[in-house]
Amino acid sequence: MTPIPTSPPEALRAPLVVEFPFTRSLGPVQSAFLTGLRDRTVLGVRTESGDVLVPPVEYDPVTAAELRELVEVGVTGTVTTWAWNPEPRAGQPLATPFAWVLVRLDGADTALLHALDAPGPEAVRTGLRVRIRWAAERSGAITDIACFEPYESDAPAAEPQLHDGRFGGDDAVTGIVAPARLDYTYSPGRAQTRYLHALSERRTVGERCPSCTKVYVPPRGACPTCGVATTDQVEVGPRGTVTTYCIVNIKAKGAAIEVPYVYAHIALDGAGLALHGRIAGIPYDEVRMGLRVEPVWSEDGRYPDHYRPTGEPDADYDAYKELL
Image 1 (cartoon, helix red, strand yellow):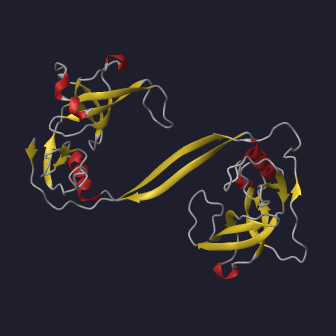
Image 2 (cartoon, helix red, strand yellow):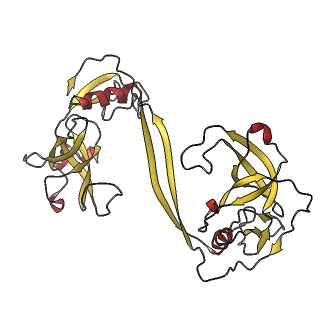
Image 3 (cartoon, one colour):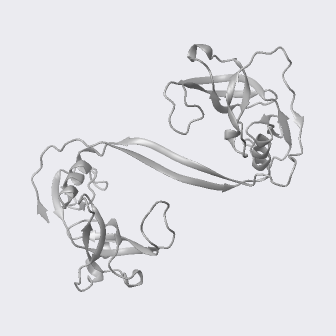
């Protein structure tokens, strides 16, 4: 381990996106609800106490009793609370400024969260009467409700009507794939900023706890065990030892890496814990605990693309057993 001088690093910020498809199957209540939306019908479920829940759930949130009594509610309702959204994000219901609203549909006892198309916040209020604007193309998803829109009418509010949950055809919605996406700006802080700057120089830098002397890579700015600041920077590696590993057989969407491949915990020489890295340059079924490896840097030299065998003899188990 080689201590290195410290200097105030340049602050780093980067946009990051976490995105994945969430796939789930539906029970009879949720299946009927989403199939109904496709048919411009809103279904709720009646609880043992007589309340109508929209969106419906399959178990009573108070008694945990199974719920199966479906009822049809109105497509008009009342805003119970709201918040104005002046800058819609990608993937939100409307591209122009709108209000997020909780709407209690006529015949329901709970409120449904959705978007309200309104010209401005001055046009929105608690108690506003609204109606559903249906999407032109519907597939059996909450997006079949394009949004709500203000609606004034003297017609009496609809009463909930029993519904058998069946709709024309045999193509009931039995499962959904919901894309989950989180966009945010990440600022790594001083410790990880120094770590990232060092990686751009093809060096790996950790920080040593002044109390327990463990070297954390990547650094965290503080020792999670002792609770004290870690300011002593230490260069570790570049070589290390595979402590544990797994063989990946499922190809990630958008990834250029062919399966199967190995992802491992690698204890860099001088580090007090292992970090993650992909192992290449060796058949996947020859990777083993104790294998000595070294980094192969990305084309732009900003981070190790993967680790490959060094050709050294395997490390003795006692040399890394505390890092498993």
